Image (cartoon, helix red, strand yellow):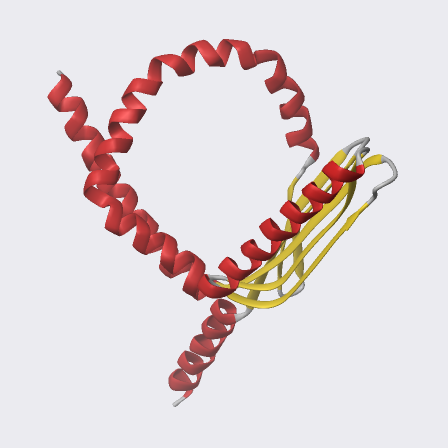
Length: 208
């Protein structure tokens, strides 16, 4: 009987772990002077900042210096990548679309989405045209997300400054999922990756 209680307790703990909500928060803001953003994950009482870390800030500065060297190396692989992408799309497009659909429709829920902006072009006519286009784009985006995903709360605030040229914009998005959903998605992604590797090996063997 004691063994049964231990098994039930372990099962309850595992169920609790995999079904505790995991929140991922993406925040980005930009203005006339600078741009900033961050990504962090919250799980139970743990909060982990994914971007930017101090190490990534240093790597970004170093990457700028070596970017020209990487361009030459990347050009040699473009043809091979395009050939692989064409083969993958023709053979695995249904699997890819199934993975994307499962990710956005079942794995994640958007708990909160806020889009805000205050800008001006310096010309009232162009500012009016820009504010109309920005509102149309933002509300069409919200409508598309609401149709295809689970969207709980959203807010759009786009204001125009007809007197001067300025820019102040921000996006805040809070996404929720659960470990169980992530595990299932990971299995689907792993199966798809194995199929892609198989196609890559076949292409390489045919070119020899």
